[in-house]
Image 1 (cartoon, rainbow, N blue to C red):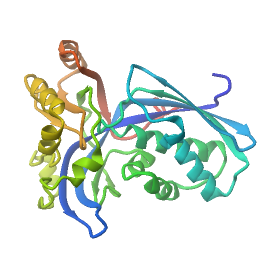
Image 2 (cartoon, rainbow, N blue to C red):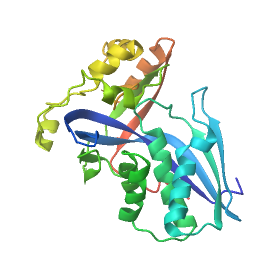
Image 3 (cartoon, one colour):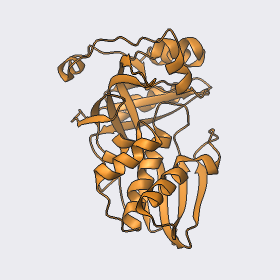
Length: 285
């Protein structure tokens, strides 16, 4: 690892709820959600190389689908940052250890992009502040800004209006069926609920929430519904984002791990704790 001088966790996220409150004239959806960051995710390692070369090596924790290197958001983030900074001569060697499946609603690609912006801003000594990095990230994907901020948050608008939120340190079991959900397909679906009434944070705290995408995703991707039904035997289960991952809270890691070991074939999963912010013990040099 001597070629890499900086390492970062790209944490997974859960949408603890997801309400669609409208659709704008440009086609983007208005929503309310809570982003819960987890102490589990992809791992990235960065090193500087001269001559403007950007290289990405990807390894996987398990046989999961991945986009081609040239289409990966890590490279897109590096190029976007370099363009804004006008530094074509700077390059980077990047190694990505991929734990989070794509099309799962866990934010893996967006989190990888945010980690890249933060790491290369430091390595290239650009000194962009968080607001500037969020603006760059917004062009890469709607979920990138929350990962740039590195805070669990209440979100509104298209997910870009963020208010940091302190949440209890719950233990979560996350399960993912062998299917990749298309977010674009879900949001294009005519049957999707788009008129949920806006709520307050106090409503979320009392549990008056749901995921407006869940029923549509389960109709279009039956594997997601089957995963929800199985997990619901042990705890209240919900889908994150537009799927395919589902999750449930448990009292402790041992309880969650016991259920994880019982999962049927066709489901992969992990146990993680919610975090309110990325701290030095999980975001490290």
